[in-house]
Length: 253
Image (cartoon, rainbow, N blue to C red):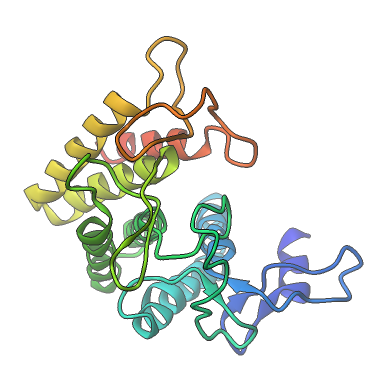
């Protein structure tokens, strides 16, 4: 039923992508288009394929991966931009004054580059294809090159197309997704630099994001690792990213 609703109300076949939002009565389609919903739909279709072995679910996940990590990334210079207009052209101005928005931040997001890298490698594990590996490497390498904070360590939340940090705070989910991607890249490529990054990201997370007294990860810390609040497992995300990252690593031991 969910798949049918997505097909009838959100999937835009001519663009091989899903719209984000309709009105409650399903009559009005919001003009905003974004990569985030499509990334999580790719993830959902991978899970659906694993559970059912229905090839159509794998084909949809593969199509989304090639659309966003391939075609649309090429339009944006090699990395995946967050926001698009109704015709799936990059919207470089959307939320330009909100680089710290929880769900629609402006800027390239290192966490999303690496989350896509992880999904590409999950697809590769199901049906090997060197394209998945090469694009995963390119996304991860780009996220690290532009998003790693050389002064304080850790990955920033976002950076501008020109390279400046857009939001330099450090978010828990960014590091969880990135360490999972790094470990999968190491297992697939055998390149020691990815194991080094896995350890480096884990080290930063262990020292700055994990609450060693009560458990779980702090949602966000300052650029210098300073504690900003006691908030953990925020609504809408809970422990999904951290548990998923641990599963990804353990699944590849």
